[in-house]
Image 1 (tube, rainbow, N blue to C red):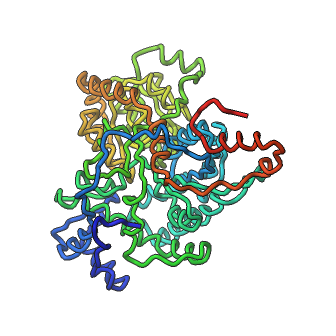
Image 2 (cartoon, rainbow, N blue to C red):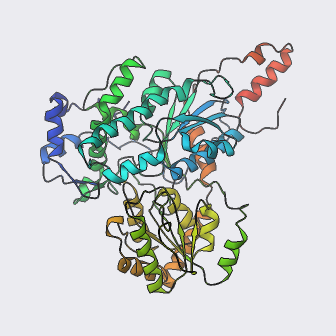
Image 3 (spheres, rainbow, N blue to C red):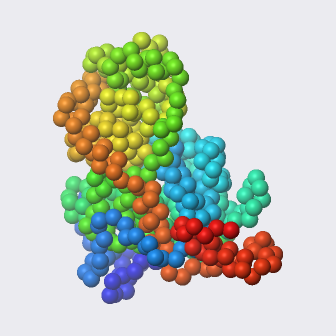
Length: 536
């Protein structure tokens, strides 16, 4: 629930409008762009803008914590059953898996719930897995076709609702059902989620457990830059763009959410314009990027942390095939080009563009097949290596520069490796990260996939080959390598836990303990998750 400083929640004229009237009022304020972003022009409809700006919380008297996470070295943290809910691609899941492993070191029982195609990945890290609805590959294809807010055809709206419904319907079981393989009971006592795991706030409300958002892109309103999915002509519209995007997303999911609340959770429905009451900006939120890349905005309060990138270090023990080592040793460091989980409409044409640009610039190249099947339809020359499913944290260290789609995970790994970067965005926050890379002088302006050709890719490669660009990339790499985002993320989670938590019910094993001393020691171990050397 939104907490307003020194006053009640403001009354809005929007609350008095019908659904269609309210929707039209906001629609007059925005224009959907061809790249799927939203242009928010406050001069187009100043009455609507003025109404929504009433939602801006007063900041006077609040303490804003900018420089990292406050450590609670003496705070007593119980051992909790934590459900981590993640919807997205491999790059979305991987930082959460790193956090899950660290939480387990503190004695928590962690379940990571995400798409079934990541089951083996999660289990390989010795973390409990539970399936969420939907397939990340289908979701990526849907997002690429529809570019965020633009349905590409009449059937896409119903397909989008189907994607949403299967996710929402799986959220409650992920937090309450026994393990599907072992039958071990599980009832979440805390929830960590990324915002696209819709149903998170509703399940947390029904179970009365704390919810903490973790995300790889900005979702908290700020005056310092616009929402990653928005374009804003006036700086004064930055904060408002977050509210408008939130409302647009709410329009697409309100019916599914309210059906879920009333039928499954027995909760009251959410009224049309009350989504701001459930805004991410009023819940503990941790952002998993380096403050050296995007500093924490000064108007983000103490409930928001920017902790650094959360890496898993998959490449430190990786042993590639001999043929790869031999190819690497034959010449200069190559340019990496790959688009990860992004589907490609024309993989052969895209591969031809890449090969022409490498030839034009005289560079060796590594082409990653990815989900778009790059390189599978074309015979490649000897100075190009085709790869599949190589850990980026090993591969990028072997490269001179990288060209990719701009997913948050791939971007962070390239920066940590000291690679100048060209981003070819497909949708969503990829445009945001492309612009950030360019603003930092770490790469050229982003090239949207629809505009990619051999000429602009060749120019991008030449930009990355400049010595001053490489120097800046190495400087930011040193800063990122000095951070430990995983430790800071766990610290943030512990810090924002409410002071009073429900006492976990005793297990059957505890009830059967005959020795009172054994019982007391087990309680100490159970409640004190900070390592203290006391173990049974």
